[in-house]
Length: 180
Image (cartoon, rainbow, N blue to C red):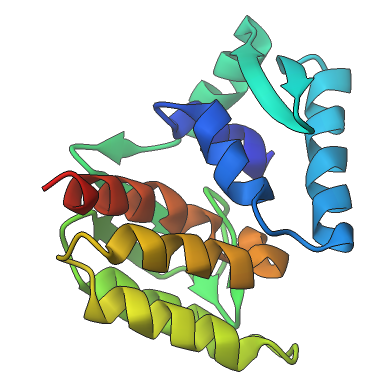
């Protein structure tokens, strides 16, 4: 469902999926395809594939209704993320340890919040993820941010559930600075 919410938030969900699929290992690729298939089988999306990635994604009314029920919030480039603790990101959930975080796409603090999430990763590529976040942080207001963003997507592919709440802000930031 997190993937559905994320796709609904995207201006271009097909491009978002292309970025996610880029450079995935077999296991992550398989997981992402399974999520897409589940959304289709449950009647939330209609999608077509070309070159082994989606080339069209359509949402039906059921998808929009679920998104509205969850109260997903996005206002003026600010994304509301509920409860990022111990390396887990629970979007729009209730938890006794709730800590609300507002992320503005022009705010470098996003990287500090991402580093906090990354510090809880236990897999061997934790340092690669942290280095990719640091690179984005160092280049966040430069045209090369887009390249750093793609590298982050590549190394953090196995942890997209943790970083999904940050992706809209990062994507917008990367696209904004790459056309300056």
